[in-house]
Length: 375
Image (tube, rainbow, N blue to C red; front, top):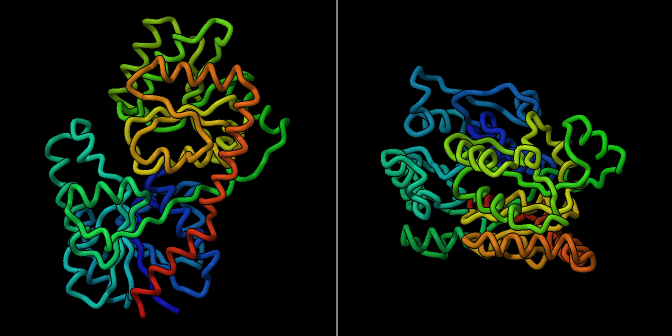
């Protein structure tokens, strides 16, 4: 048995992207390697249905700050707690490692999800960008092993931090098992009725930010012929960019065509994926693009971008559009909705490709990294 420590801040306090990565990995590690001892280090915990399986589970030991300065604990105070718990290996699940851990006997792994701070700099305030850049660069220079979630992210790490590619291993992500369960038509219908969603719709899942290009998708929908006048369901939150989206919807009279359901559970999201005619993800840049995997496992055809990691995630199971050209996105939507044979081919190729992201295989691969370091 090994004592393995994990940065669990996102696991306990983030209900989307980085939190999902952390929860899925820890859930699978415990499932396939129950003999190991998993310590979850977090400055605080948010009580939520997604976090209860970890905070109330004897398979995990949660560790919280023993100091009053909780905001600085992950960076500067955690090392003493790691040594006290006799942690043998520590995995920073979201870009960061505590300062000074390199001066201990503890082996270190860090996952780098993306380098949006370098590729989309204008989306971060200058001060935040400097802080993140230093933290990410420092982690990459100090870690015994770097995990990149895609070849695209690996290439970005090499490019921006001049890291030896031999120190970086690509291990893809899987998704929650709920998305791999094929649901009945009646259950899907119940979920749609509960949230007052149309029977036929396009689907967008993700934060409503400029990088993910929801405005480009809406412009593409405006260009569709009236015979393909299909609503769009948007599942995701936003702030400044969301205001731009809502203004666009009002300006172009799309209020009856775009739906923003709230408080969607993971189980309900699975049903909404499976009920969709098409999943649209025309993002400009992603470290990986986990919603694509969720759609592929849901046997829903995918339209996405031909940039960054998105071709890795979607493989042969997607129509690739130019996200800078709404007419390209519109052409893809028309192709998939009007050509049923092509649509079915995308579904079959996409589902076959999704098997590459099998949770067990990826978890075994990650544990192999840990054990190689602990030899």
